[in-house]
Length: 491
Image 1 (cartoon, rainbow, N blue to C red):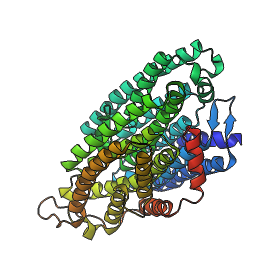
Image 2 (image 1 turned 60 degrees about the vertical axis):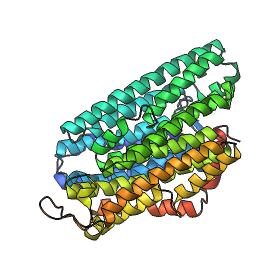
Image 3 (image 1 turned 90 degrees about the vertical axis):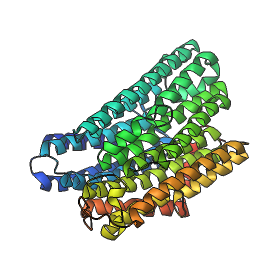
Image 4 (image 1 turned 60 degrees about the horizontal axis):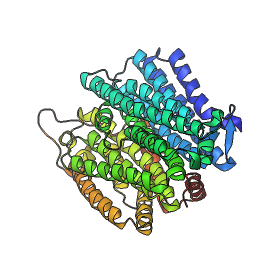
């Protein structure tokens, strides 16, 4: 069983080493082979998540790695997002005419990025989680700036500066929480371990813990795209290659939120549920209001998807603020559904951007008649993101609202619904202009290919049927979601 904890980290790292050492010498023929190597590594992460969910809690490497129902579920999210992203990457690189050396670097970095996210959710301590989150920042910054254009480089630097500021705040929170644990005589070996901190939470100094938790929520919240440190997200998603945007939005943001949820478990035991609830409600409503306002005037469909990510992370923060078992299960289900739908949306948007030469909505007008597969996948993914049935986001949002009313937060549910309505109207209007408007004519009009490459086409077709199937019936996920919510202390 130890192998199940090591493999999600080791297999992507091994794939990264193979790509760095052997790749980039045979042009597009090599790119075709890497799709299977990358997809195999992502499938291994997904398979390990499923196996860990079935086998129960496990520890490895002297207690440094630990898996429970929550960790297993997050591995499933990472694997489910990484699989289509890896399948689409070679076609994306080939279409952009990426040089072999750059393709080799891209392949190695994206596999290491997946390994860092897997390490984050399998870490048994807050300190190792912080290191893994910082590693994702470093690795993904190079991927954001992959094109090396002025805009891409600027977006990468903005991403590094803002997220590093957030991670620095989180580091201060880690130090203060470690100090509080030492003062509470928590054993030194477990002063940052999840299990030991939760077991001794009642003895932590409330004032020090309150400051530490506020810094941790703000710091990890920056990485999750929550207001007020959200400004990196639209630029990074707008400039990153489509598969990287899919991984960042569908997997990295939930991994950062996972860190907030782990901190919330300790804070609730030490301070009561009110403190973190207030922090998360404030961040959730601010993020939703910001996303709704910026979506109203958005004319770039990749940035539109980025603001949609802020909206959905705000919605998940709202569910976490409610904190009941139903709400927490709904947050996790929403993370999976959002990851699947957003991956398809970004991959389809990447195909449309390459073909149209622009990510402006006006440049892709009437795209449905010229590129039915990419346009259809984009439209269906947007419908899923807007919460239409039968996709799982409808079920998760409904469960969150039910939990909010049951917890006496009807006023907050009403505010969230109003903001979601504005965001939904803006997103639907922008998508309709793309898919249903008249085709652009005259100089600069795009000639879109009818079909994306085979791997990219498979990636576009993978996510949404699974998202719909989960929305219709949870099946084995039902018990896993409840167990994961129980890990977070939800009742």
